[in-house]
Length: 142
Image (cartoon, rainbow, N blue to C red; front, side, top):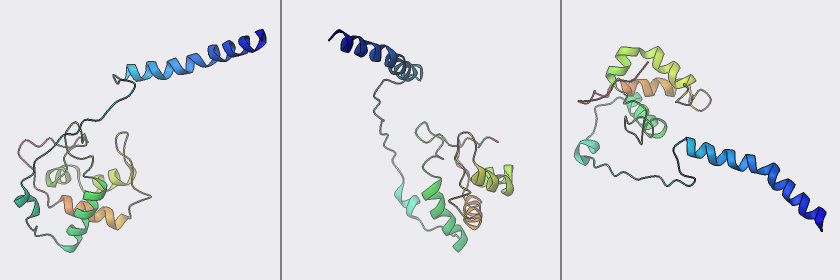
């Protein structure tokens, strides 16, 4: 009976640093142990959103790909921290930089070289060239 108790205490002592380390890590990140995401409602001008755009077939495919792959992160807000992208960004950084960034990614962005074809990256770039900069838009960092 005494040996069983000693073994259980030894196991608890052995595992306690691992349990404490994960709890401390969560506290260091400024998060509680259990976090609940906040939902932020954004109102859109649906007339502007639904207005047909004068896009070519390549631009339309690029818009669909951007909506599927990029728009979830590239909103320029706390919930969508990626920078806003558009015509100004493509002109400033260049087509080849945008293509390479989409293909390889960065520390904050995953690369898509294995899930998006080069022709699709070209379509996304063509679409971005049609997106006008909005007032107050923050430029994408290099």
